[in-house]
Amino acid sequence: MLDRDRIAATRELIAPYLRQTPVIEVSGRDFGLDCTLIFKLELLQHSGSFKARGAFANLLGREVPPAGVVAASGGNHGAAVAYAARVLGVPAKIFVPMIASPAKLARIESYGAEVVVTGEVYADALAASQRWIEESGALPVHAYDAPETLLGQGTLGADLEAQVENFDCLLVAVGGGGLIGGIAAWLAGRHRLLGVETHGTPSLSRALEAGAPVDVAVGGLAADSLGASRVGGLMLPIAQAFVERVLLVDDEDVAEAQALLWDRLRLVTEPGGAAAFAALLSGAYRPGKGERVCVLLCGANTTAVSFER
Image (cartoon, rainbow, N blue to C red):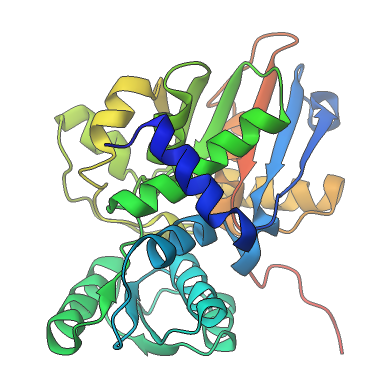
């Protein structure tokens, strides 16, 4: 069961291996909005995204065989598993699709994991990883549809509530749903929770419409991080209970959010990491006057900003 007690226990288990990422509060007027913005800077987490939480929850909460661990990933989950494996001294093999960004591939390789690039999208890499699991006996670490992954991501909700006493709603980007599912299990309706997807990655939107996970075609700017072809079955009932609604944004909205976060706050985000903020800038979500809106900036693995050497 994905309840608050298990999330709290997971938080205690993985805390020594994580950063306590900060929050910053800014006036929405800096972005043409009549509200208060509270950014949770999870993009500063180890490996460059929130995914380190679920990775450590899996590697610390399960028995790892001599063959090590294996993961399929659009990039961020693979980097997190590779990082956790390096810290804990276990082998890791990561399968990624061809749409994975060079920045994410480089990050995975920098942690010493073996990387296999295969298939067009995440689902192809997942299928290849499953074949390797059968052959090797390695421990699978699913990016979003495993209890330990959801428990790990849920610790972000616990951290946020400990850091911010008062907020009206929280905007969270959605890929396979592990992040918003874990957070929803922690918040359990105490704060309004809204998901954000791009029109090219609408897996949760379609699942909520259908009442079950369904396959969707994925593509576009944020597909390497939000491009799961279907949401996890574990998270869907949690989302049905506790996610108010899912907002859809265009790739152009995401690119604008990236640019403004860099211009106004000097924060570098990948497309998926900026998607939640894009919902505000685009008007997909219109906050009430004086509303306190939390925005999760969940990833920074991008080459959007380069530095001359």
